[in-house]
Amino acid sequence: MSQFQYIIRKALPGDIDEIYRIEQDSSALWKRDFFVREFKTDFSCFLVAKYKKRIIGFAVAWLVSNEIQLNNIAVEREFRGIGIGEKLIEQIVEISAMRKPFKILIELKEKNISAYKFYIKLGFTKTGLRKDYYNDDNALLMEKTYSE
View 1: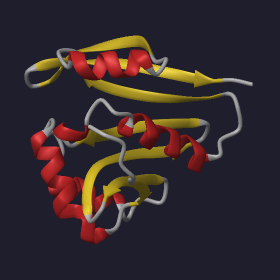
View 2 (view 1 turned 90 degrees about the horizontal axis):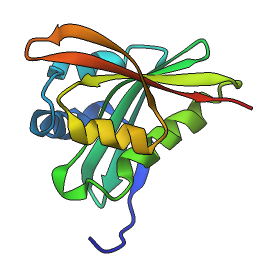
View 3 (view 1 turned 30 degrees about the vertical axis):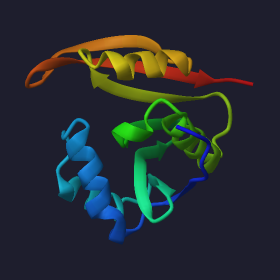
């Protein structure tokens, strides 16, 4: 894909249909109501990546104490592999303005090899495993620590 301009901004309630469409095409673990609830959660950071008039990715994280819990992130298939997911995470880190050291925690399906490779590339390390956490898979726990 050639270079293109997209923006990252806070999610708005009117974005939910497009966000949910991306979720259904990705993991479909979250129900539509889960996204709606994030607008009422004070410690939630809910961002979208937008290209022209189209939402092409999103990220939802909770900013608590000196940790960022990355709860959900997805990018439309045709826009994957060009850095949008990484930019969404960078923007969450910037918005959080956490004092160092702090860490980002994530959980993903153990069988999701592409997500695992994405997080390894960004400097995350495996910290644990929750057996049979999902109906069809284990949960792999990973984290990245930002220090001074």
